[in-house]
Length: 74
Image (cartoon, rainbow, N blue to C red; front, side):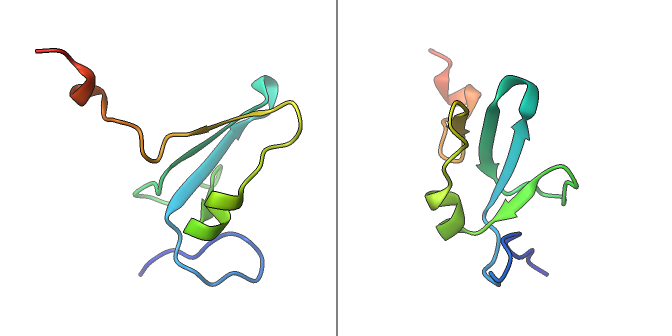
């Protein structure tokens, strides 16, 4: 069974996982984690795309990043 978006009132399927670190004012959007993480929020595509971090925070969207193996020169 697919997980739903964590946003109140949203019943869309989750596609991304949001994690954060208060001490460093940093948040990360990753592809949906395989297992539910109690320290992450599952977000649908719409809510992930519209996410804006608090003022002074940095948001790193790693959903479309190249895998490290693809960056190695041959």
